[in-house]
Length: 193
Image (cartoon, rainbow, N blue to C red):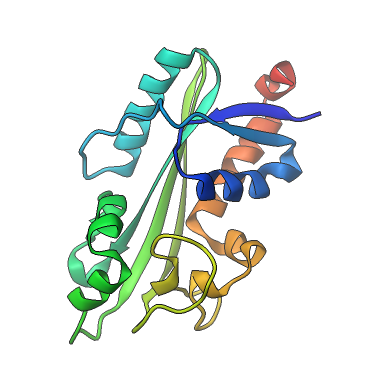
């Protein structure tokens, strides 16, 4: 028997990744794409909390909201919380052009998962350090995965890793595992199940 929780997102890749990570905890997410409301902020957590509050007011059922961003040191953290917009407008190639001529290619992916229910709202954060590749590589993943090299996986981009390898070191994997451990250990889990 699994615990079903709503996931306010329109991104099927994120739902599939989260479900694969949390299957060992007996948790399955049901996507609800129309409920996520995003504010403009420099804080991923502020964006995710606002969206979670709004989605919970509408649905009145336990749910999560996830927000992620790619933070590039040389670009003073850009695109950060604006990563989705940056990906849609300039893509991986645009980021690579912005870094032309620079040696510092250090970057990190950050993820914030916010759980909202009648009783509580709680945030879970995951970070993956690495660098930006010179060119896109690999056929897996999504978003900026083809240009992000994880420091935990040698010289391979997230797109060159299997889904299992990626979730073991990714920002999203870390945040969702923290959520899974917390909810599995709580009385709330056993009540909902």
